[in-house]
Length: 318
Ligand code: UDP
Ligand code: MG
Image (cartoon, rainbow, N blue to C red; front, side, top):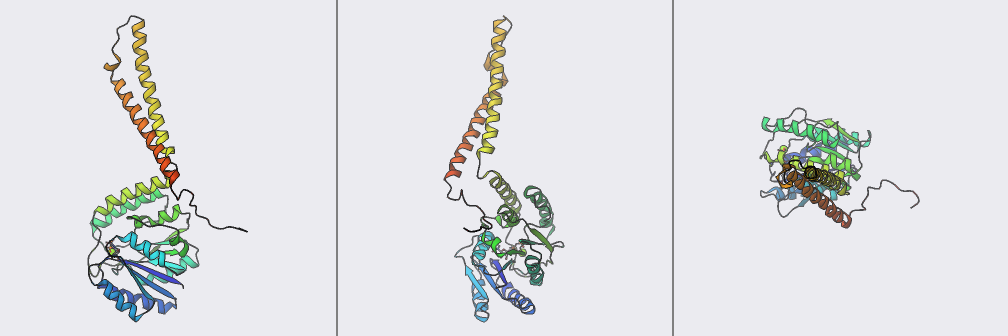
């Protein structure tokens, strides 16, 4: 099968028939073999009934439904697990992404050799309250992830080589960082294609402004786990040791100065009268806490059943 189209949806009943007809038209015009996997993320409208009737008319239309609403990432992950096509395309259900982009996305994966191609909504039809934070968000994401050529991490329209979606795990709200997840899994040929974007035709957006706060927190998590997840001691241990040693030296200096002055009959103050004593104490306490956090982290990492899960690309004679 050439293409799997994975569509996560939550209360998008009005859009689905139009979206399906449009996809069917593009697929027929390009003679692709395909499947459309609708992942119903616990919709409370009649999205599922609509999917059932669409599937009855066209066997390429498939559906999977959660019993309750989990979020876009779990929906994508579930669709990915079921996708059989050589190229997997994700798109939003709300008709903001255009199926007309699919043939070129397919070509970029199969002919240009990209592992992942992300859409770039250069001209967006969204309110300013969304487009401005999005620019900032993407600039940060580019810096942190090192994927410098992407302008739009969170575009719903993306294309993947099949093995990419089978080797990444999208959970929580991590759909914003799928290119980063792919990069962390060793898929580095990541491209971008400018895509048309339309204003939402039916229904309303499912994400509020909290997306930006959560987006930053998730980025911090991914960056940290990507860098130190397997070796927490390298972060906490280093920081903790440095702080402890600094505190120790400082407290030794305070004590030494007092003893020196005492010995030479100079005026001297009690160790506990010096502010540096308390600063050093704090440093030593925090330092040992950090060290301990690193140690506990190591124990957790050591016991993870996935500690030896590596991305194997190829093998010979094995
Ligand atoms: N979506 C989903 N589960 C959710 C929220 C959203 O499956 O909990 C789907 C939604 O139906 C749509 C896509 O994710 O197909 C993108 O959502 P939306 O259009 O609301 O996001 P926006 O375009 O405002 O970024
Ligand atoms: Mg949308």
